[in-house]
Image 1: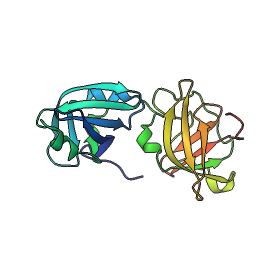
Image 2: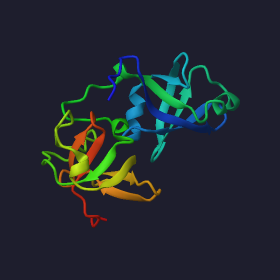
Image 3: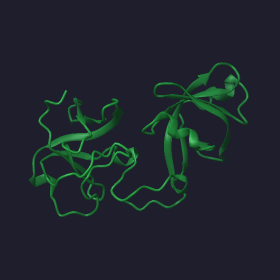
Length: 199
């Protein structure tokens, strides 16, 4: 995995539509909790100079609404629809060893196999309990591939991986210490001990 510089833009969400008539926007957060995006007060939207966030709040589950200091009408707000909200990598809160941002898990291969044991369920930041560095485990020799991470969801009890296979089929895999056995960012895979009978 390439090393990111402090200036690398990190997507926190996407503008989906205007909100009402005074230049407010609707944002679908990519953060684990919708409210996490509220801590950032300067957003880059579609590149270019940052927007100052004049006000923002969680509007409903999975959606934030925001007022930007220089966006004053519905037409200007509509022009931002479909663009990502980003901040520089350096502005993100530091993670403890073994923790991961959800965005780091998108696209990783998910493979079947018990592998190492996890120490915690990783609910705070989306991390598995095994080492996420350059382990020697070979995912090709320890069970079949289940697909790639297409997304993550909160369910209340625990987070859930949305895994999509090559045929477009999806399955939901709980993010728990018993199921997620290894996260290897450097080699691009997540190893799970999964029989499909959880849900």
